[in-house]
Image 1 (tube, one colour):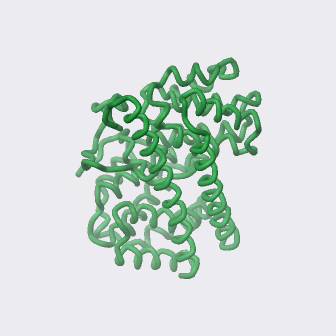
Image 2 (spheres, rainbow, N blue to C red):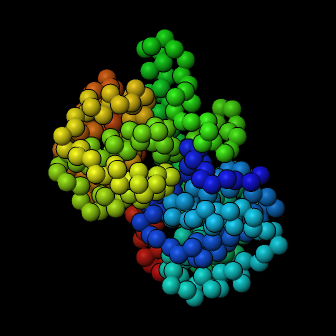
Image 3 (cartoon, rainbow, N blue to C red):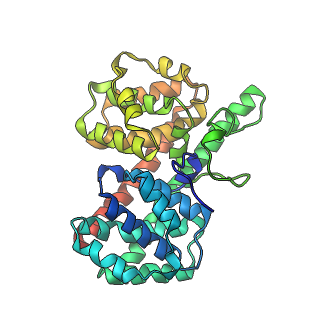
Length: 336
């Protein structure tokens, strides 16, 4: 099936794409890298809608243009060899990024619809071309398992909060209600599908209320640091925000806002707090989470009547994710 651009339905972000947009890659490199991922993940002779959706989200996070997305959609991955495609990538200016990103990107993309043995063999072959031994691939795979476990647990926290909200109001939980515009959807989502990463929630508001909440937390200890702002902008790009939308958001003065101001802009803030906390911890923690920032997060919980136990649970999960990320960085530091 053809994927139109932009692919704005939040379900395409069911895998954590990390801080992709911190690195800006030129269009030709992005296109060739995307093709390499398609060849590897398509080793089982098919690319599912979930794999294609993941790739579109991943490419978008790196700033891929409409033309690149369309070129990938039309690419004949079944009849193209990986070796000649990788050769110029590994000789080019982004070789280090390619070596760091290809294997873990391929694993994540292939796992979007369950990792097939043929796909894993293709991943091992790609690693061989990168002079990466099999043990490293297995370790990277294990660390990505940890990321997935954290994401799934966060999704469970979201579901619990939503059920509690529905029970308190006597209603039936409906994640789709008032969350996004059907006109933006370019994929048919299977009934009962539950995303395995919390980031999709922050796309649910057309006014980026959740993004405003993150900026409110970042501003709690004064003007956000350059590291915090860099990561915030990266996330906004990965969520499909335009440069104009990003500029409008960061030009607001969040130091004068209160938790009540933020919560009043989103009646669904209550069930999205686990997602908000996970991402806010990543961004605000770019320069170490300060006490005022943590207090701002807790104020959002109190304002919505949520237990702070959920905050501490999400904070603990984020600590596990960061430990896994540190291990992953250490692996590639040795390898590169």
